[in-house]
Image (cartoon, rainbow, N blue to C red):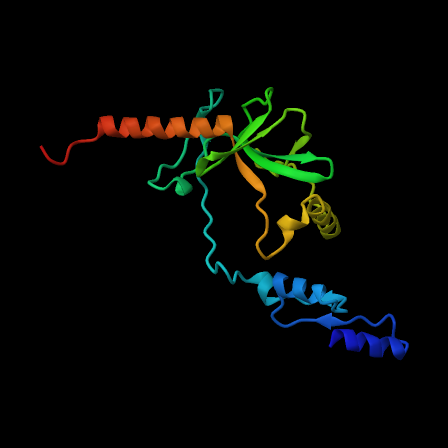
Length: 219
């Protein structure tokens, strides 16, 4: 309908008239309409923008990852669970993105007190057999920036236009196979090796202390 409407508008001389579309639009429907050559200039996304259809309840929890006395050394902490995916990550965390040429390669979650002189090894947080080695000369940059320090805002709030431009720029560095909705390729995101090993060691230490301090239920 939008294709035929565009033809009728152009024939009548209304070349500047824009065609709007709305009603239960989401990213999949919009992508499919564009693939079919729909002549829609403005997409009215409402319900699926402000509600979470696939996950109506979104949990948010602060979890302690490090603790120190004033002037003291950091002591790394984590939440212990029987399931690896529910355990938190210890350390003062940052995310580093590796970009080779015009394409993003991988993201690594790391502890800011660790170094990368020999490059970076990324480990899947739930399957340590899945690893990727990144050479130290691959360009990279950190993604997280501070917003508040000591109760004061240290972040310059960007305009909506700059947010949009930055989003479009970052998306351009991802291959099309990753951005597609149907059977997308996987983008590598994982824990830096030193951080992963520290986490495993902390888990062992906590479980060892728990076992030593536990009281048998049956004698």
